[in-house]
Length: 418
Ligand code: HEM
Image (cartoon, rainbow, N blue to C red; front, side):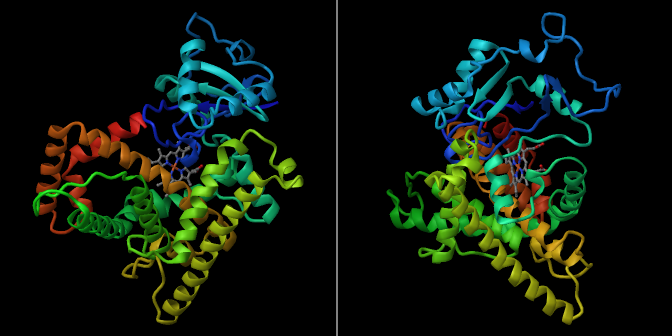
């Protein structure tokens, strides 16, 4: 029996979070579930006898068995009906908060085809992460995995486990996580951020109220932040601007936004239902989900083709992506230039990065704006420090970030609460 252990970061806000199983507003959420797999009641993830650094005793002085973990009812289908009836998919964070209060900081839940162990306390989550070892086992987002299988696409790191996951992940780290990579793509992010601020300024001037230079405008920032995150992701990943800040974004870009939103919105309910059965009965929910993914893949495919052409012509000119002095053309260009991952794997991972980077960027930004908005003194301190640091950085965004620890602190604080 395979059961997922779900790590829960409590969501306090009212809009999206990373966590489908416990975050807010799952219509725009991906999954944070990030933990071990319970096989026949035992947590897998390390070889027997290896030191895990895990607390050996439970709260009452002994380790509890899997069966002893409190749960919300054994019948997954009854629970699923309750989820639908009480619209819990949309208010999952509230349901989880109630359940943690009622059952304690670790509980089990069986909903439809999905079983999870939900963990609330950061210290318990830390223990779990430490126990996972080199090959952590991730919760499979079954609807995503089924889409890849039926369309015969490769899977990216999000959907892989074990050695295969680690090998691909180490290659991706070099292009996405390492300081040298971040240094390359920061200027691309900076360009998008500047354009975003310019667009907002124009809108405030045009639609705001009050005297010139002191105009104010009340707006719901979430669609704009979503577009910002998508534009920034495309620039970093594909090395391409898709023009989402223009007053009339291209049809292709609008369709892409629609596809990402549709894919995210249809994921939560599908998590608890068997996708293969839904596929067989041609359930509209499944069809929508799969078509959204198809669109996201064809968007990636078109960019990969373009990247390929660009790469071939730059090779003709004697420069290779990733080589010192070569122009930086985004994560895709780097991966293609180095040629260590197959084209199929590049497509799979690029698509996951696109899908994974949008709501996760937009939602914390919205939380940050909200918190800074209601703490104007903190806002002013952060702004002063950013301005001073920028003035000293000589146009180097990385240097400017290093000189603005309050900004980093703000992001950390925000991530701990969304
Ligand atoms: C504040 C923003 C973000 C949060 C809170 C967040 C959260 C998470 C979490 C909790 C996981 C699971 C980690 C694990 O399994 O150990 C994850 C995985 C992942 N995230 Fe993010 N993420 C964020 C931003 C992003 C961005 C911007 C991207 C893409 C550009 C992204 C792409 C991915 C990918 C591809 C994985 C799978 C990694 C793997 O299994 O190796 N995430 N994210």
